[in-house]
Image (cartoon, rainbow, N blue to C red; front, side, top):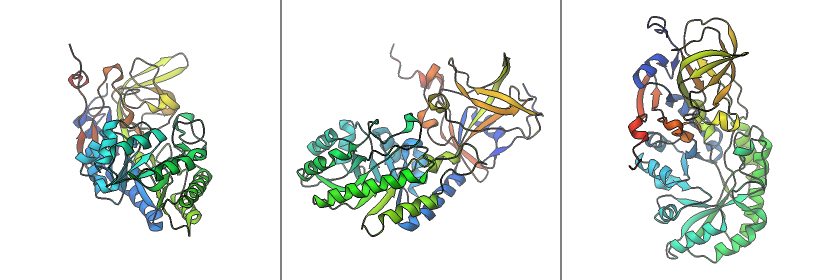
Length: 414
């Protein structure tokens, strides 16, 4: 292990020494830089808000009560897709008038929450949901709804993060839209206010977004012809982000906002988008401690004290987050290395070029992990999920405590 003197100087995250964070909260540690998050919110506001395109944060990317409280003070809407996300947002004081509910298989309890107006509207995914929601809603006080349309647009992303096209489970196929619209007209319990379509994640090209909004506009024309006063089209999210802090942005927000606004100009419709990753990813870092460095054949393995349980995406579909060694001093020339976790699984987090002198006790931060990292964490191997810390202007505070072995076993019945 490194000596205290050798560890004294380390790089920072959000203006806070990585060593201070590790010693205060332990590792693995999920760190969210609120200053970076606010920069992204401002960028979206300048690009989309200036064109009167509503921006909603997709809570599935990462949500906790403290983040909901932070977002409540912004103009953002919030998309939730489970009762757990809804209760989290409510505990953070996020206003119901700016929330809406997603999901392709909502429970009865979730539908009742919608009817109770704990959100502003529901995005209906399928005909069965339409009927189940109508059965709970009173005709005297109809529920506002959107219909999620599968426009058939397939973005060039990994199959696991593609949510549009005929080979996905999401939305009502365009061919079935007229019949669904007829049924909505027969149900006074529901008031159709818009249409929605989301085509995938990590989309780095402008064309799929524009093709998607074209299909939504065509679907809106069908709805209007059948007597539905469509007010809004939500074009989904899925805006790609880069792997590392120094990489160029894959898609320019100004170009996307301008393209969407141009397509819808003169139609009398409001547009909306719902980024998750593109808002929170850059603000997040996963801080680890090196457990050991070992050679196996021709490979050098750097084993971290996290892995599959706290950051499953590299193993699920090859997501990459560039690592940054947090030591301020030189650790020698760079050489190839495979970053792995410590779970009883081949949880390789990627092949990278890392200093030859990297050793047990050094800190490594995986950058741009704000989205779908903590939110997808598990208790695999009965590891506890890591604590979550907010940093801002050199200050830090814990907003989710780490799970102990007692926490992990608290639901066991013997």
